[in-house]
Amino acid sequence: MQKAKVTVHPDYRIGEIDRRLFGAFLEPIGGWVYGGIWNPKHPLADDYGFRKDILEMTRELGIPAVRMPGGNFTSGWEWKDSIGPREERKKHLDLAWRQYETNEIGHDEYLEWARRVNTDPLYTLNMGTGSIEDALHCVEYTNHEGGTYWSDLRRKNGYEKPHKVKTWCLGNEMDGPWQIHSWEKDPKGYGIKVHETSKIIKWIDPSSETVVAGSSTPNNRTYPDWDLKVLNECYDSVDYLSLHYYHSAPEGDMGAYLNASSVFEDFINTEIAACDLMQAHFRSPKKMMISFDEYGCNFSPQKQTAIGRCGAIDRSAYPEFSSHISRPFRFNDPDAAEPSAPGEFLEALALSSILMTLVRHADRVKIGCMTGGLFVIGSDEEHVWKRAGYYLFEQFIRHAKGIALRPAVESPVYSVKGFNLNDFNQTPAYDNVPFIECCASLDEENGKAAVFLINRNWEEDMEIELDISGFTDFQVEGHTVLHAENPHACNTCEDQKAVMPEEAADDRQENGKIYMKAPKLSLHVIYLTK
Image 1 (cartoon, rainbow, N blue to C red):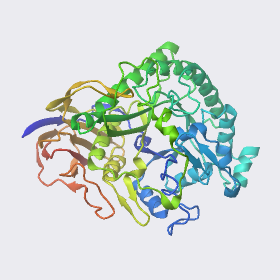
Image 2: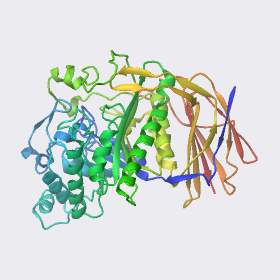
Image 3: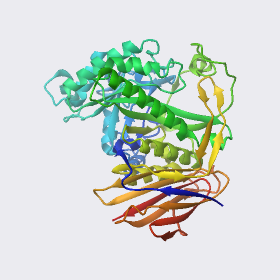
Image 4: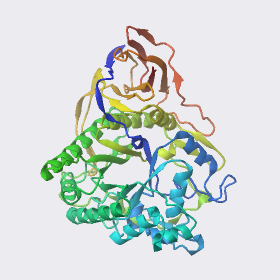
């Protein structure tokens, strides 16, 4: 059996872990909202039409922040048409997802849902078709106490107290040609618009923070020059740079799929370097932080690719310019919503790896929103259940607190070939990828520590020596293992315990070290307490 060694010490500190690092994402795509969190005809609907069973399980999970209401959707959304009496709201075409937006769930309902599940809303403003004045009115309506037209309109609409949104995302993926009113070819214009909008938001509410949209993927032909041109216009007025990335791997290539963290690592390091370059350029004392507020991992089929991008839109890479636009607009009936993907254990393991990457950059990455974070909760018309991803997400939310620690890992390695799935999903080769991946945290205030560890070897179990001898005043409280013999196992309504965390039974402790067996494709969380 192969062997690895991991050392974690309380003095190897990275930075403070912001609770919002373990956030989620919400956008009215298909049945995510209409038929997902909201169905007024459901027997368990509350006074707003929210499904109480989903709401209560979301609150139980304890997601600290949710980015809403999108997404591509927000670049064409008229928020003013979504407030007031439902029967007076305007129905629109949602060009982003080719659907009818009825606005039955609108600005106030999104924020009310966030309040009921006890999460901080990360509100996305329309920087596509929306104007600076629209943003001004939205923030005034949302956060000002009263005495103005917009704040008094909120009170008239039934919300006496301000919603107190702290974090405002200024647009979504504005570098992408798929975006409504894309700023792909005018980063300077977008940067100026963001600068002026951010100023206004902070004049209305000085406690607010703002997030500028950076590159939506490292595969964009404009990356990272676009980010530098945007930051050149708004560096002093914004607080976070937003990043998005969806890692695609060739179908069946386990090594490439489980190597998502290497690609995320390179993306984050490049963007940190871009931010620091602008800090030096302006000789500014401010260090820009990162909001990684959309991410995921999937397998994709091989498609025809071109050599280089050459500034052209490739139809196979951007389906919204080809087959996408031939689809008719659809109405999302809450009573006929299609269930979302079941959520395999393998996906949960890959997402754990990405979360570890964010934790290892906790000094600069302060916000993270897992795109499928709310859908770790499975549901049908009558039931809710915890998918495999629920348990991984719960572990990080519960135990990754305080200061992030930098582990030292000595592990067998593997190599990943570079691949070109299409002109939008290109990944270089990686050598010396460790099978064992790790992150750790120290919660000094509560006398807690946690070590998160993955064996991403898809063929072999591994023996691990975990050295925690530096934690002299701590005791091992527990060791939880999330593992499934079948990596494609899913928790379903019929079988809700196909993937469940279990307590490790065969650990051996000696001289401040834990000797443990890590089954192939397994997530481990070791808890320490004073």
